[in-house]
Each structure stands twice: as C-alpha cells, then as structure tokens.
Length: 141
Image 1 (cartoon, rainbow, N blue to C red):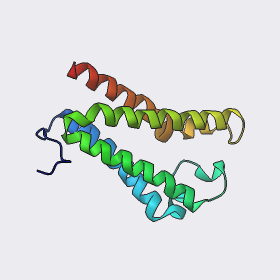
Image 2 (cartoon, one colour; image 1 turned 60 degrees about the vertical axis):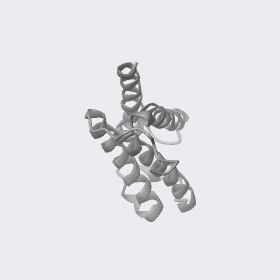
Image 3 (cartoon, rainbow, N blue to C red; image 1 turned 120 degrees about the horizontal axis):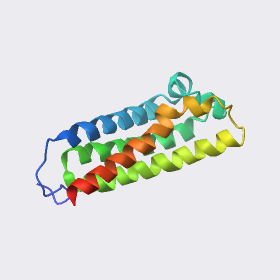
Image 4 (cartoon, helix red, strand yellow; image 1 turned 90 degrees about the vertical axis):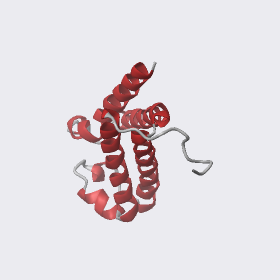
C-alpha cells in the first residue's frame, strides 16, 4: 500500500452504489467536456448555447472540475473517510453552479424556460448531493 492510499478497507454498501453513480455521471460529463467540447456544447440537452458563444477553453476548464468531482465521488463510493469531504465539495460546487444559473435567469441572460431546463442537471444535484452529505453525516455520527 502506498503512503497516499487510504489506510482503511474498502466497503461495498448502498452508498457505494449511490456515490458510484454520481461519480460516474460527473466523470462522464467532465471527460466529454475535455475530449469533445464542441459536441458537449451543442449536444447536451440543456440549452448551453443560450448562455453565450462557444468557448472550447472554458468548457475544458469546467470539464476539469466535473472530472475531479467525479473521481472524488468514486473514491467516496469505496472509502468511507472520503464520503463527507467529497459530497460536501460536490454539493458546494453544485450550489454555486446553481446560483450562477439563477442569477443569469433572473437577469434575463436566458429565457424563463431555463427554470425547467436546468432542473435535472443544475438544480437537482444541489438537493441530491446535499441530502446525501447530510444523510451520510447523520449515519456516521
């Protein structure tokens, strides 16, 4: 075992599945952003072009964040000591990301249809990841 590897044993429980799926989703999105930003920009069913012109560099920058969070959530899926930091970090990013979308929708950068378009990929993750973090915290106490 290397010095950087977690010293605890790996587990397989319900959180392994939940966090594993969340991690895979974030990682898949991040890798798509890194590998094919133009495809991601036009093909993601979230109205991304409504927010402004294509910027491949910026999409790749954000792809790094999604990839990092995906990896952290995958680690949290099997190493319990990662669960609180990974879910709190992912929920924090989701909250800030959602706040930007709220601001842009309120100020009219995008139309009111984005309140609904953004539910699955922007707003729901805030509640899901926050709920998971709280639930894990309560069950670990």
